[in-house]
Length: 184
Image 1 (cartoon, one colour):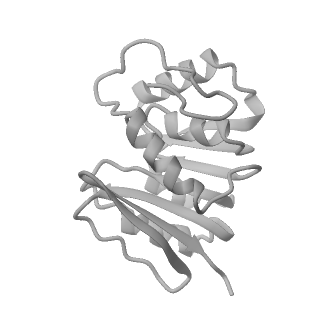
Image 2 (cartoon, one colour):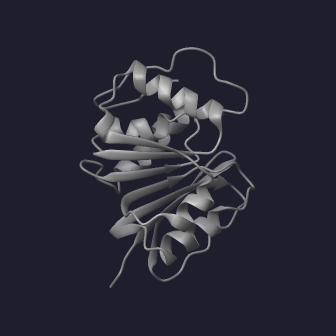
């Protein structure tokens, strides 16, 4: 498991992943970011990484120029992986924060705005639509911000007219949905 590109490109997570941590494979993450590169400029953006797991996706955003990433993860083992990885690559403490919380509970209370929100919940958890709803209700995205949701291929993501579907793409058993938030 390594960072694909950018400032920290080529750096790897050392050691074995704890049980229950399912990091996005290098190939899948590379495909994900190749797709995102067509629509999103990462430089200077504030990112929220929901269900952060190993932290690889959030660190990939930072490596590609995001100015800050908030990692949300409720389980201790993945948080320890994120902390160790961040320590190993010597990330500046000002560009990230790690929050131990249930994602839905966090989004219900969050008052901060982000440019990019990424969610890769365990498939069939049925949280995708709840996340879309909370992001809209609590205005968690800046205007023209992006909500990126990875779900099982057969899961439907519902969204209001405040979101524009930028792209939906199948990756084997998963589906990537990219929505742009637009307050007119």
